[in-house]
Length: 194
Image 1 (cartoon, rainbow, N blue to C red):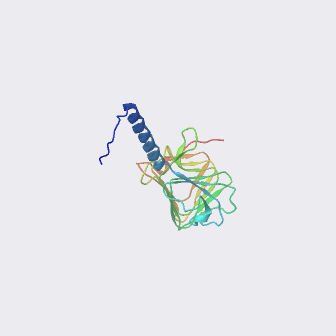
Image 2 (cartoon, rainbow, N blue to C red; image 1 turned 30 degrees about the vertical axis):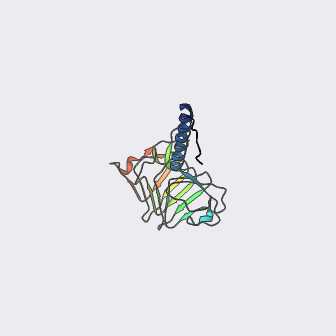
Image 3 (cartoon, rainbow, N blue to C red; image 1 turned 90 degrees about the horizontal axis):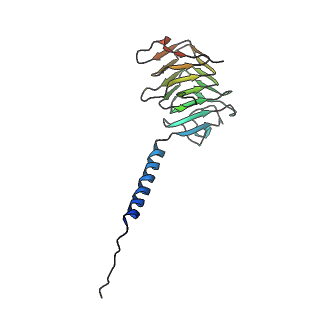
């Protein structure tokens, strides 16, 4: 016995709505893939490369925005090479990069008033290793914004950025500052705030 099927043609607006929903979903998916995740330092030890020191758990990657808060019992010490999209050292917090440590940043965050940067500190940063900012991609308007204490220690420490640094307090550069794009070490963009 043969079965008969009857098909009815749907109005065009049904297909247009379906196509619009699919395109909207695809756009949201693609936008979400480009968003940087945030990693918060919780500090069960001082080791940057310990997954349990971060929330959510896991060592930061080049696509993560890192936030180091003063509330952590132990503050991070970087002794090996590490990556992040951006780093924020909040007031009362600290970050130490030892002579064997290297932190490379190739992302940025907006800290208000158009102050996009890869490295923002209102805390204390001591660099005896390498801090590399923007060696493979743009890092915002400024490479580094310091509103706390930043010290590039003697003995081989280096700070290199392809963007100007915005200095709101003092950046102590006892060793090398290596700006690119023809800037000299006096090419630090300085803006003093009280």
